[in-house]
Length: 153
Image (tube, rainbow, N blue to C red; front, side, top):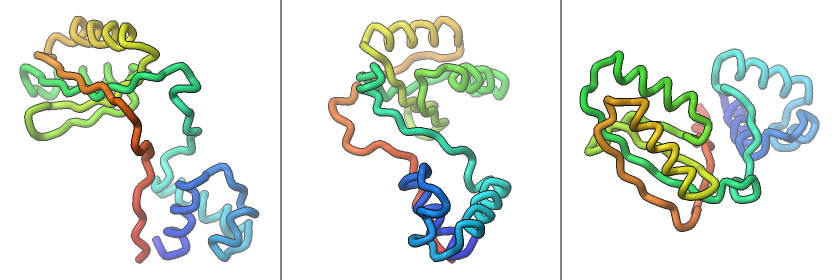
């Protein structure tokens, strides 16, 4: 990855809806060269996918919770079962296998607390290896994003 790729990735992370023509001023390449580089970045796996960032409140998901899970046993098959369950659940926006007191940390969105409680009750009943969970309810979103800082070579 060179400096042009880095500038292109930064620009796309800021707003991936811009056309190649709109990116020419920022990246200093022709539109066709930008399209070619974007395709290469996708082929190399640097760009995994392009998504829309939806305002959760306007979409009816005004509650964001951070859940910390502890598991009973860290056997690979049991962890794999839990990972698959978390991956299939649309209200789980992010899930991390972590070190420390918790084994997993989840970012969960819900319309209201009852929806979150239902989700966690289902998680516990369908995943017997989960020993316990704790929840932090967010009071305010200070920053939300997934942009990765890109260092140009």
